[in-house]
Image 1: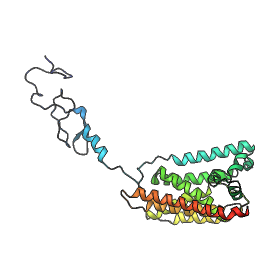
Image 2 (image 1 turned 90 degrees about the horizontal axis):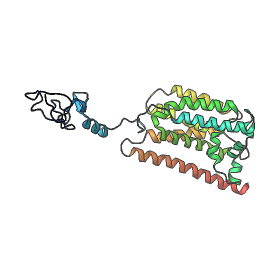
Image 3 (image 1 turned 135 degrees about the vertical axis):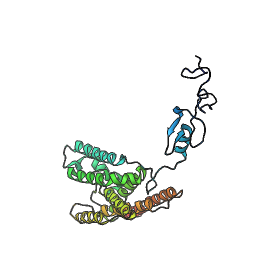
Length: 298
């Protein structure tokens, strides 16, 4: 017996079923009677993959993956059910709370920690000492274990459904803009000589995102409206920042509407980015206006 050049197994010299058959396009030393149903080129079994109809060669499979448009959500994000940002935010908030507890030596009076004093939203300090970062950092502080637990539970319940729909980058944008929006509302309308802290503005922004999503998908909004109504009543209780909640909610609604109602197609992402940047610029402008009002009196 002899072996044709490059053949992996023995074949009789004359005659053979492989005689006259074309060679595999990827393995010229392998005669084959099989062909790709897409390009009609001969291919050996090793180079073929099962398709909806027949078999395709590995080259056509790879080309198909490059040309097929990936599935996206209504917001234009790649379809991915993994939730990563929400647990990361929960861990970050809990870590900041743990640091303030360690510094203060107390679970309930962690607002005495130096970090808390440096990050809390105190409008007078923002203007008098030039510390605008408090408008962001205050959103990662919490007064005691109940405060942080309630906010993180709400973030987890609401955010794990919205993050996959918006996509990670868009969700982060909505969250941070809502956080900033709640702080700006406090800066504009709240007392200048008291401190405000908490992720409530951002959580209310996520709540607004849920409402816009339900309306965009034409689902029943009553359960969401009921939750919003209950939390709105709670917002009037002493010690709770009504302005922070309202500001975060309005910004969350506006930002999510910009994402979900942007025209589909190539212009979707530019419109979304432009709208989010516009909201951010507006919030910065309102902050600058209030700063100019407070500077002469502080």
